[in-house]
Image (cartoon, rainbow, N blue to C red; front, side, top):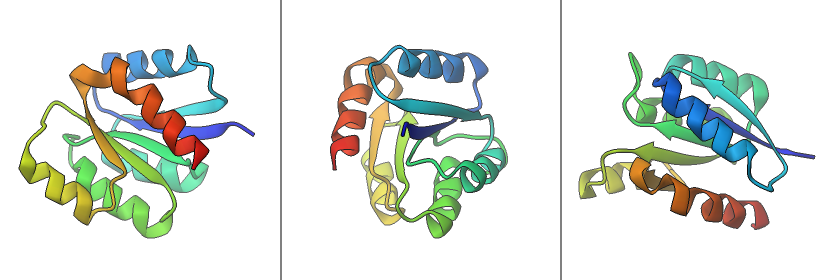
Length: 122
């Protein structure tokens, strides 16, 4: 059975690029998309993904807030933050929200697939 992955990202081009990149990998997965934190929470509760890739900055509801809401109902879901921000302040927030990992958007190609493979074998 394929792993369900949800991408929550407000930039259409970046979201499409991540989806296309994932679909080219040799991993059994089904990829879903949401453009906002609110729609991401709704889609997560409906599709019940095992992994969520999420931006921090989303319109109306931040990725951190969306992560908290999703984890409340799907505590086993692994959330990976994709961000342009890589500061120490965010690290403590990620830990408090039970975020699996965070990856700088500039490091996506080198770090995302190894991290997904690591999560999938746990």
